[in-house]
Image (cartoon, rainbow, N blue to C red; front, side, top):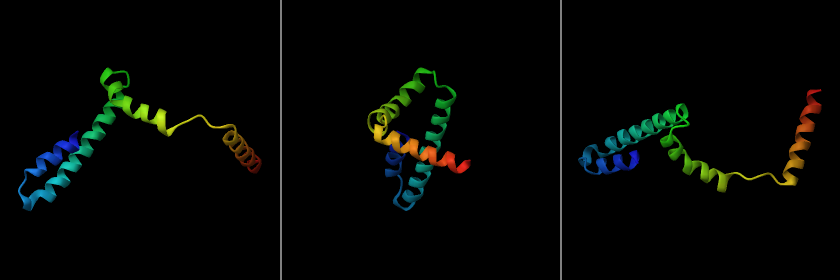
Length: 88
């Protein structure tokens, strides 16, 4: 939302300063995102924090992560055993 607002505002800037305005807007959007994320980690039980985190958690749950298959577990166990043998 912050980057969208910055882009709308820079669209109204004079053409000779539009590039600098976009950079400033992008930096402001990044700073806003960092501050919001920091607040969310300090207040994980707050309803707004939960609402902001929900889309990312759903995306990770549905697309990015899955339970390992038995073949994947077998490879992981073999790799762990080999590492433990090397450590002695």
